[in-house]
Every structure is written in structure tokens, then in C-alpha cells.
Image (cartoon, rainbow, N blue to C red; front, side):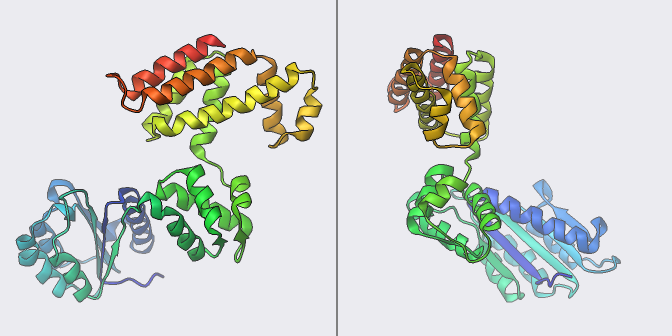
Length: 325
């Protein structure tokens, strides 16, 4: 059974990580005390006054009582001092309260809240987004926490492949830790071979649709990537790299090489190479070159030139590429 502190405060501007921590704590709390032992205070009900009343109320529940509170970033200092601080000072010994605050801009937790949580014997954890230039060092530290070691170039490669989302980086590190085992030391080549970029995998499907002139799938794949937060500026080089791979194979086949010769010298899994070869045999190398030129133009246009949005420019470019193949 878990050892619980009286109070927790998880705050910061890494909203995704905060959501993960909240979900994890709720799952552990329900596993220990059941749904009846968990109370969630959120939305308009999440006020210092309501929280203070809830923490001070008597309960007839058996076992530990858990109170999860969202929205502490909206509270005022005076209200926290008047209602939450006294409640934390007199918290029942079988109660655990967890405050979650998704900070952004001016929305910050009042200084009285972390002070009161610590005074009650609780933990305060800040989940802050890491600046892009600091991500490789952060990746190294997280890898060490998971029991593996990444050289700095390996950490830089991971950030380049996966992007700057810390949750994604953590998932890739967890996969590497499971695959390689405790104590593994990874260099850049190891990460290049092992770390799969989920966005890149989806881009493969988008490029497959481009080569097949399947406009409907092209647009759907692009919009799905955008909905999950992928930037157009990041998708363009991913698409270009995948198109160049198909073009390189198409050029070799046009020059007289056999598929077996291509497979013998090209990198990648046999399944992926078979697919690239099939695509290359069914397309025109000149059309692929035109598609790459269109991507290069799109990259320039999305740097603030013109009045159209990035999405409009990208959809128009994808439509031309799909028609050109």
C-alpha cells in the first residue's frame, strides 16, 4: 500500500505532464480507497472557500480519504490565507489533498499555497516546460533517472527526431530503457536506430498517399497531424526526407538496378524497403522532384511571406503534389 503525504501541490506550465500526474494520482487513490474515498473539486466549485469546507468536513468513509483539487492557479492570496491555510493546518490524519495548478502567463498559484502545503508535511512539485536549448541535458537527466545513460549527442539526436514535447521524449526514453535494460549506455547511432517518431510514422502514411495520388488520404493525414499539435515547419522536412528516400530508389531502379540490389545496400527494415521499392516502381522520378520543389517553396511561404495561413498554404501545396504524381 502506498505511503501518502498529507498534501501535494503539482503546478507549472507543462500542462500535459500535470494532467499525467493527476491521472496517476487518481488511479492510485481509487485503487486504495475506491471511488467512494475520492472527492474531486474542479470547475466553478474549485474555490478556496469550498476547498476549506471540504477539508474541514467530517467523513464516515472507511480508509484514507483523498481530495483532488483543480484550478488553484485562479485563486487569490487573501482567499487562500483565509480558507485553505487553516484547513491544511488542521488536516485529519487520514486525509490526503492534492492541488493541481496549470499555470500560464499571469495565472500563478498564490505564494501562501506552497508554503502551507510544505508546512503541513506535503510535497510541492513544479512541472515546468524546458527551454529548447536545455532539452538535451534534461533528456540526459531523465534517462539517468530511468537507469540508462545517453551521451550528449544521443540526447540531441532524440530531441531532433521526436521534437520538443517533453511527454513524447519521456515515452521514447521509457521505451529505450525497457528495450536496452538497466545500465545501458547509448550513443547517437543507437538512438537513431531505436527511437521511433510517432509523427514521422504518420508522415510515412501521408507520403504513401502522395505517391499514390490519394488526395483524400493526403488531406486527412495532414489534418490529423495538425490536430495533434504538429507544426507545419516540422512536417515539411519530414515529408521531404521521406520523398527523397523514394526518389533515390526510383533513380536507382531507372538506372537499371534490380530491387534485390537496392535492398542489399539500402538501410531500413526489409518490410519498409519492400514498400519503398513498390512505391518507387509506380511513380515518376521527375514528379517526385517537382514535389520536392513544391515543398521547398512551401517552406519559404510559411516563413511569414504572404497573407495566407500556414494550413491553407500547406493544403494547396499538398493538393498540387498529389495531382502531380
